[in-house]
Length: 161
Image 1 (tube, one colour):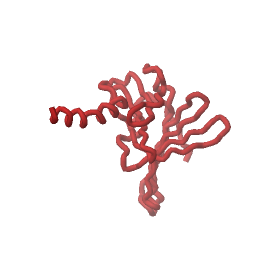
Image 2 (tube, helix red, strand yellow):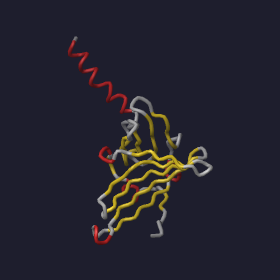
Image 3 (cartoon, helix red, strand yellow):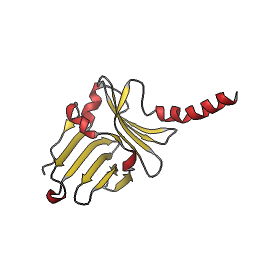
Image 4 (cartoon, rainbow, N blue to C red):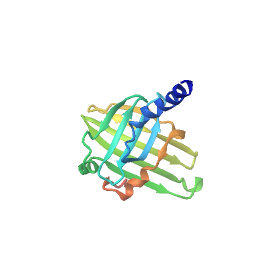
């Protein structure tokens, strides 16, 4: 009986995180935040849909888009910029994914700057009045790569750099 209790105790946290990834899905990009929340960008393994999920370990607080359809790909815009050459060339790797939901603009980002060897990830949320809220991601917890969006149906946008 004691062994059964220990096994259940170890499996319960896995069950809570499982709602962020369904059996038919794979993670494109994810990270945890300083406030112990989680952001996951997932897609169906056969590319039927893409979805953003955010919340606590025990509850997904936001899913976008609500419907898991082929049209979901068109609700996101991805842009990236890559410059090699290390510090001497101010090398950088910038990845941004943008979407709108209920009068808010969401920008998921992952950046690297060679000059100071800095990495960052997070979400910037902008309301209708232009007020920004920054949710800082813990870079060491990130998984996946937004670069995989290059070969998907997500809209691509040029930086102009």
